[in-house]
Length: 147
Image (cartoon, rainbow, N blue to C red; front, side, top):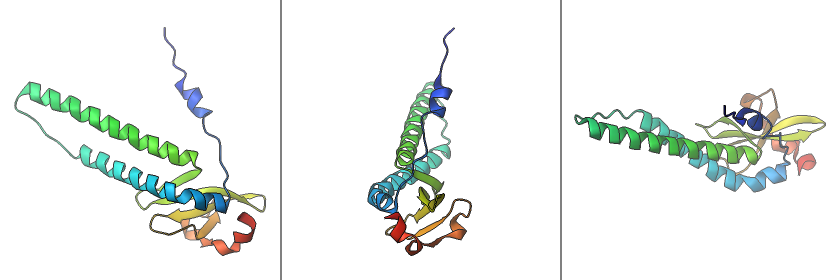
């Protein structure tokens, strides 16, 4: 019997990545592009799921079904590849629809989140790990320490 070891390999594949404010700002142009791509793929997948075509001819229906699923899975695979690339850059996606992300950083011997949302020019806020978006505070409070 063939055994698959995918789960243990997945569990040990990612480690937490801390970034400084300067590192996060340098990564931001590429991260913005990837976030836009991920959002586009997510919308395409959502649209694909809303399609419900049926052909009278059984063979045509079968061909469409095969092509549809092939394209859907390709889009899905690409979507998750983009998410994985973002995670490797130290990005924690909080809300893809609004483009809300965090970079995990370290300040005064504790983890903090450098907060960013698509549409902003640069990272201008941070928050405590358990505070979330509503606990955002100006980055100027940390700037000297994190750069």
